[in-house]
Image (cartoon, rainbow, N blue to C red):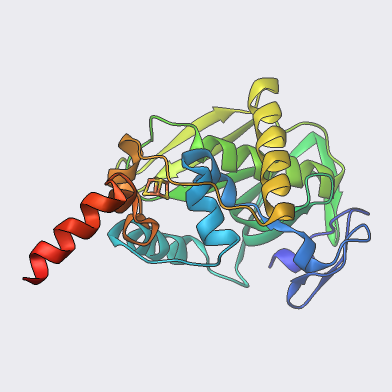
Length: 241
Ligand code: SF4
């Protein structure tokens, strides 16, 4: 299980995962996975993470089912040159985020790091499982890159050059290069996110093409916001008569 892995000096684990890190309490950390919704729509993220509202739709339910398959706690596969850790807690005190990796593969490598209770050196590679097909936007790649940056900070290893996204529809792994530009976007998005969170600010509705596939569009009232308020009240009065 992941708790067997030593997180370097970046923090400490207990049975329930992460405890205090670098002077921050748990509640000071934002959820790593929020970068997906934040890059999709700032308002969606704020409604979920600041106002704590959430409604499932078919996309999110299917996604959860798929994650349950990948998340098999207390299970670590070990082959000669490979250790597979599932549902591994990760964090970054630099970015102030915490989350979990679906899968982290540790391959034996001269460029790797030591792991508690394991002989040799091991190089970590995160693998994120997703429902559906590869997306046109960068949401999945941003999340994966953030996971890798957390692992680098926790394990004090060098830069992880490549990681993988696995898609349920194609049943294939996609390699993702974790270059400087992607890393800068991750850091910048979390910085912006922390700013909004500190002010507890939820951005206003800005209706875009993305709203059609949004899992919380009913709650967001995107359709209502697009209608003139006077016109809306007139329509309601007419409906009631
Ligand atoms: S409905 Fe549109 S504006 Fe509202 S949260 Fe979803 S994507 Fe954002």
